[in-house]
Length: 122
Image (cartoon, rainbow, N blue to C red; front, side):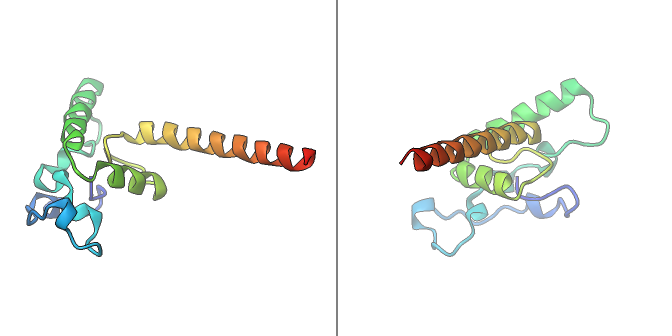
């Protein structure tokens, strides 16, 4: 999703002009192709005190939108690098993004340990 909950949700409802990804100007931001720009922003962010069943249903619906998005990978990486603390971005919930980030950190630590071991042995 493109807009954090504190920004105007009306912006997300404005349909963008469709430009094929391969023909898009390389300087154009990735989010100009985001499918979520045409969907209700509320689908991607939880209302306060949302019941668990409703949250799970809403998140699954948001993930279905993400699944058909041509810039899902770019969106996901944006949300991981920022990191975006709320909403469904790139097909991942905030909790799922925290898991991905923790795995990346563990992998980085493992790679650093391996590199030190190789350097010490060499």
